[in-house]
Length: 406
Image (cartoon, rainbow, N blue to C red; front, top):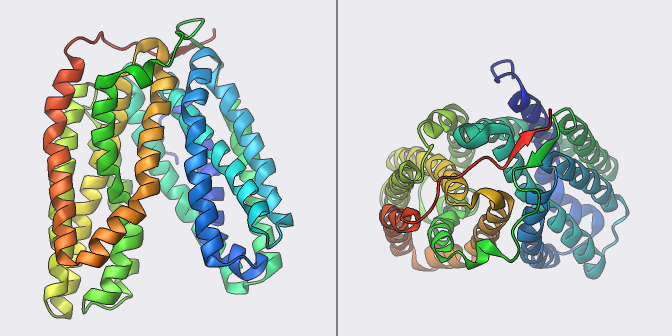
């Protein structure tokens, strides 16, 4: 963390680190706690999380508009305090689907709100020329935080007791409080426009929605590394299942090392569009290699799986940084938060539907399913520059969302 830049970005990085340590701890044990300790069935957990995730998306644009009119630092701190309180609800959860659905829906609404306001705050902290770099730095910090949190969760997993899981729940709640306190060390920000424009500008901006929807389609790749690859390795390749751990490590290391360099130069929509095209090509190569891993003996399969993961990781980080840049560069200057909310809404919908669509395509169609994904990623990547040229033809240059109050 010493390598982090000084100033507001450093303060926000520490807040992100605290927040994601908690996410890492809870994410590593959530499914086991809900099924083994609370007593919910896997079907109830999956159904509840899917419904809650879709409902949670409804908070994206309203909270983005709020961040356009109020200090995003204060809003995000308040949201995180709410998340800390709600997370403690898991201590009292009973094996009741409706109680679980209510709790996880409230949690999802707050998480969506947090993510949307965070995007507005990153814009305020980084400014027009530094916000994509700030996002990249925070993404690396988040990966470190998740890793630390998952490592801490290992102790609770080893104990596999109610008390161990409950301690993680309390620890997760405390990280929200710490993060909220660290955010308050940032200066207060005031929007450029005292009052955000009336109406739902982002939802009426056909050009922005076209570009963002194209990028959202590419977002389904996030289902690949955590869901499809382990199942594919186990059922369709001769590689040992232990290679899954190595794949996750390779993906994490590349993300930590290459995300910030990949963000350099993404200060215009045109540059982001080219990065998105490269992302589509890299992801397509990865899909072909994952498919080919099923066609040979163990050494061949392991080699192709690792090569595919390198290509996937490059495509993943290029997509993440390009998508962020486009969401900022194509937004109206006085509605940054609202536009980030619209972007969150579209990408969130793609992520919610991704496991069903992508999982069914690959697991039912085998190698042809992977090739189908490769075509999708190629088309969305190649289409990006033309869509962005159309979207920027009549747009004004963007301005910073906010400036610190002196």
